[in-house]
Amino acid sequence: MGVVCLACDFLAIGHVTEYSYEMDQAEKLLKEARNNPGGLSFADFQHLMELKGWTFKCQRSSHRLWRSPAGHLLPVQPRGNKAKDYQVRQFLKQLDAETGGKK
Image (cartoon, rainbow, N blue to C red; front, side, top):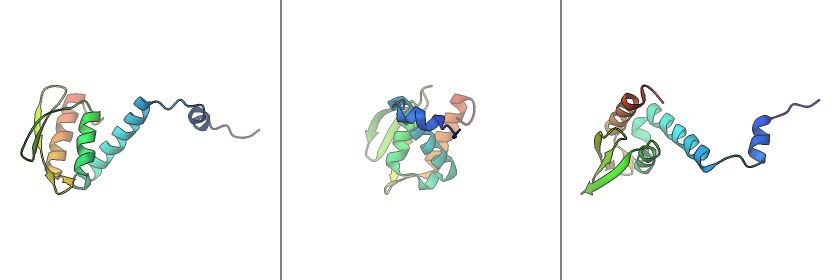
């Protein structure tokens, strides 16, 4: 009897949903942000905030204002095409505070 790969069967019959793809993407970006806050692209940083329920509020010059699900405001701006590491750390700290830990 051969080895049965349930994950392969699951993927082969098309059970990967947009939601599961976005959650995998969010977790990948979150891991990248935690491991190397200064290495995250600004586009990925904004996408991560969006995937975690943050909403873009407005932009003044290069500063973009984001609101967390709990109402916390965080202004962010790029450094070239990268996110500023201290702003990524501020985001992670607020995310952890709102979700009860590293999620």
